[in-house]
Image (tube, rainbow, N blue to C red; front, side, top):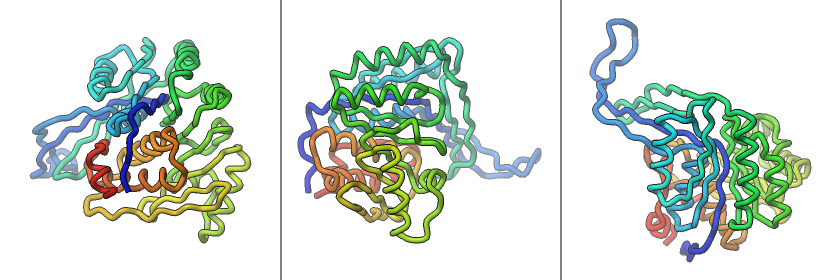
Length: 310
């Protein structure tokens, strides 16, 4: 199987963006002040995270991608704008003077994450309204819309956005957050991971019960499909035609940071191109298998995916 041509596929990504910062260092001793490791920082990296990571994953596959999100008027917001534009994404980052750009700082020692520090605040209502207006203007220029919800407040108007997108005949994909999915009603597909699905639907004892819970959730939310990403168990797509299951692609190194971003980005590109569910989730699953072998939020290039598929 080959990836095929995705040139001309147009995606609009909307959601919570963040700047992922990494401090890499050596750990050789325990602090005399407290029982914690001392990390001597040797280098640092910055990467786009959240919805920005979704956008850069889609762009890495060759799609034409626009990103609509909110940042603060600060150095982190400026870094995010610069980084995402360098990935070939058309970024429209609305600035809210009242908030700080979300930053996740990870301290890494010996290839292991030792600590994560989060900086975040909620955006104001006025700037969210402005984003909604721009969303409506950008809709005609896309084939599919991906909403990346990280629970940071940037998708307050998602129900209205989904309604507008579906009325315009667009494919709508949602990476959900929280324990109430009612705001995502009417989307084409939502992509909870295993723990998120349990939070919303409760635990299941076998595959039959999982299917029953998934079909019930689909019916309540009027979804075309529900994709549950299940870590080492692969992923399962529930739709009117039944269930499609993809086994996990085994990797020696396993870092799930941003894997959901890669899955929904790849799925969005494939569906926007016109692929059926089976082919779209197979390719998304292969992409996930590649990205979990990388440290931190990362992208899968078109070349890497082509090689893995062949």
